[in-house]
Amino acid sequence: MVKKPRQRWGSRIGVVLATAGNAVGLGNLLRFPSKVALYGGGAFIIPYLISLALLGLPLMWIEWMAGRYGGARGHGSTVGIIGTLFKSRTAKIIGRIIGVVGVAAPVLIIMYYIYIESWTLGFSLSALFGWLPEPVKTTDTAMALKPFGEFLAEYTKPTPFAYLIFWITVLLNWYVLQRGIRYGIEILAKYGMPLLLVMAVFLAVVIFFSKGPNDHWSALKGLEFIWKPDFSRILDARVWVEAAGQIFFTLSLGMGAIATYASYVKEKDDIVVTGMATASTNEFVEVVLGSAIAIPAAFVFFGPASIPELAQAGTFRIGFMSMPAALNSLPGGQFYSFLWFFLLFIAAFTSSVALIQPMITFFEDELRWNHTKAVAVAMITVIVGAHFAIFLPKFIDELDFWAGSFMLIFFGLIEIILFIWIFGPDNFHREINKGAQIKLPRWVAYLAGTVSLGFLLVITVMWVTQNVTDPKFLVTGNAGQWAARIVILVLFLWLAFYAVVSTPKEE
Image (cartoon, rainbow, N blue to C red):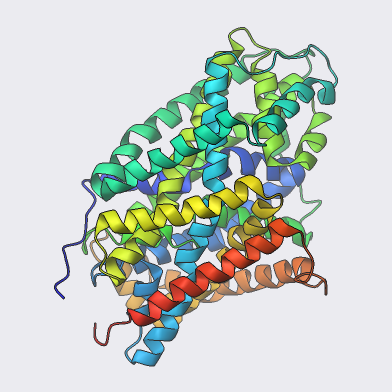
């Protein structure tokens, strides 16, 4: 069968913005502040920056190289890309089955991510129309957040309005994906990313010039909490695991999405600079803007004593309770809340289309399905899984535990082994420098294959030690947890079957 020409990005700025949009998501603006608050500000930042240098950048370049290499050979999913590394059919099949992780993981993540994405759209509309609760004038953090906690609990039952917004979110994703890489995802990124940056900068300025109930509570104190070096927890294994996990989540590493996007660039396009630009844009949003909004706002309106309390309650409390409670206490607060939630929606939207695309690319490249069929099957799969997330308690937590943590770290290990040692350090060095304006030195390949690999192995052992040592680990759970485990197994077996039967005899 004759292969159809693969899609291509329309411009270099388009691919940078689209890939940055893939990386920039709720993890930057909600998950990062939550982790910083939970693990002591500066005590978290040190392992975070080390993880960025030793894991983030090397893996970003590995995924860009792998994606462009596979795309030049007609493969944009990790199933097909990994298969190209082997000559024998048996080895190809094994490689393709391993590659299924890079298709399954983003689909599993999007099953709950798209539901949370719909919350951001629903809350932005609620703020715009004045439906959010009125702020309570009190210095008691719990009392100030109570009406917003009740609103969140009621909304996520879900209410009929929340369920309608979920379907609108699904249809928006479907529409963009149906339009394809160049006319859908790239256009969304070209408009969405600049808008996101403008809104984030504006909100950061508003917060820094706001006054709370206590003149001693300032946004600068919030920045000091984040950025003042603190070595008190430098030997705490959990802090290192969480910091490394945040790097994987925020840069969309180990998900297969970066490699899929990279497969649509031309064979001689510069991926060294593009990879750096992707990581830099993401880190700017996360460590500059992400650290300048939620934590400083908590310091201004609730005081430093509120930070541990907010952190213990998790990501959703900071994003959907403390931020609207703080912003709504300002003149014109409903508008500021609208900007906050719409900012989150744009960040989530550019990420969600990226998480669905690897499955679409898998169907198109490996099964030769037409674009409309591939998009439809991928979206139906997401919709079915999302309904478990909507109606079964603990389903989200279980999927996030496996797909949002374990699979990312595991697949990161696999990528380093495959694309440095199986592919060969010299081949990696030669391939990544094709068309590069700034050539990576050869030692980068060996750094990734030794130091990065060793660091990730240590992180993996720490993760397993912390999470999987309980003998009851896999034999307990409620209906939502068991449903999540079954969904993971069924999805993996389904995709693995297709990966095996579509294995080409020759490349």
